[in-house]
Length: 521
Image 1 (tube, rainbow, N blue to C red):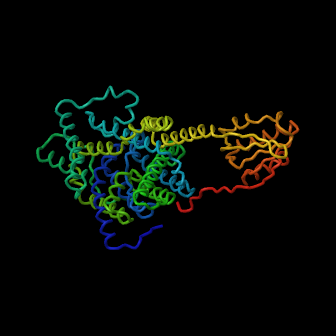
Image 2: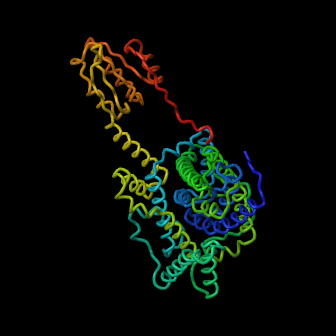
């Protein structure tokens, strides 16, 4: 499964340097996402290292970066708060197994079914959820993630917000971090802007002795290599009942975000990743991570774009990023504990701004109403529930809207041929949405004794279409008329023949139909 292509010296240099850049930017994000999930920062860093390393080695998209993400963290917080971190590790293991199963069943190809409005709603909802999670840092309690899950229930009115100088200092440091991240790339790109913002704000807080919360005040990240650890949970059906729903949601979110990122990197690099292999790679990575004390993860859109834009296109870039990150954990942990919480919050607010599709406000008035509804609805469902349910709802609504619109496209043209037979030419797809309109356009009592229905410009798409044909044939049979069906597809004729002699099928010219195959993904 491991693939290491032949490298030229230039490729090695680009991949290693881009991997270093990604690793530097990964540290604050992994710590921040750990805070969102309500776990210790080291749990997020371990996840970023292990998931990133394993997916870089065996995943389906070279150059794509994986690690701890906010999309998963916002789902994990409720599980951790109610049952503890050991149940989270068990959930991550099960999550990985479900993702391996999805890859084995070749489900990766179905990411093609996600419409663009659903993708826009997906990222908008993700941005809103991450933003709401950051508001907890402005509460006096200061417990990361304690506000998450209460926003929509109205208990936000009972939040004990920071007051006075503490609040102003927090806001000032957050704003300063955001200014540095926004403007620094205009002057230099030698150092990641997020890292520069954290360094400047950290030095300012330490140098001036400012009284604000630090990473070390919340939890220590001091540690060594991750060690093998079987999650300490009871092995019974009750435990399975607790972790299985979370595992399904996390697996779905992880695969959706990973496959969407894969498709984005494909477009940028003009190459093709392998979706099903990426599913397996993500699954193996999460299963291993759960046994080594990590919070799990998936592909990271922002870090993947940083890597690709920095010249990292091969697997070595992801491997380098993971190894550099481990080096930071082992050597630089005392320094990371001096990072102000405000700096991490500023980084996350920049992530929110960069993630949100601001162009969606402009396109809402230009796209069909159904697409606009799907975009808004997916965003709202993401905030109210989770990303997986939101994407599924969006795809279902888009599919129903598509079916409703194409149900209007079927029409039947009637004429008489030189033999005196009534000929109906069907145009448009015959499926569950169009069968009612299809049947209304035939009147067996008024037709000649010999009737021909021509499907050359139509396609019988589903079982509802077959049932409509069968019903129509029965109506003509009861009226004492002879019915001929011509230009039916091979699969439709096969199914109709199984019904016996109910329908006389006289195929004049048989069109060929092909089913799309994903043999490479």
